[in-house]
Length: 296
Ligand SMILES: [Zn+2]
Image: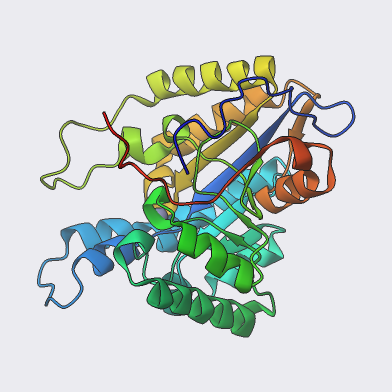
């Protein structure tokens, strides 16, 4: 594909269900210790700091978050690496019992673009088998670890019966990439950017003040209301399950609930709406690789 194959800027407004002006999805990437284990693969780990910090998620953080959502009758979308479900077999049934969506997030929180395509697809198949064994549900949604995607993996998901992906950010509402529905994410409303701190080399500063983050997230939500987009919040068990972030989440929910024209939905419901509505034909981009060998 060349750079200017799709030059249009004349996209219409997104159409939400009758009476709704925008949508809110509360999503959680249930990473626990999986990214740390993947990065440390092949090594003996003889230090406990980061792994214990991350295990706070499945031990305490997740339950506090699902209790908070239950208070407001909110059903969220939970993206769970296979190895996390395998290590904590009560997690997926707990989420299903709460009416939440369970969806895929790699098997080992592996980065898709760093693997041979067949291996990445095989991990997805293993995760589907595990979901089915633990809950009877295969998991129809997918979010890539670290939000990186490849054209090969888009095809793999189609072959494996995945109905939508939630890893990219080419629109601020759902769209198609090739044949697959994309329910977009956004770094600006990801808790890890503000609060992730493990005292490692990648941590440049202390965790943010949740008051400032609340103000920033409310601004983004208000903008989505104005433009009719999708406010897709992404939080993590081991990060947002801490008390001051739970209080932030409660304040954000309280603010967003004031407007009855907001559609509260799970990501799979948003994807199904997209696929069955007029939007499906209006917002489509190809899934091709990009040829960057053009003359400068
Ligand atoms: Zn993740």
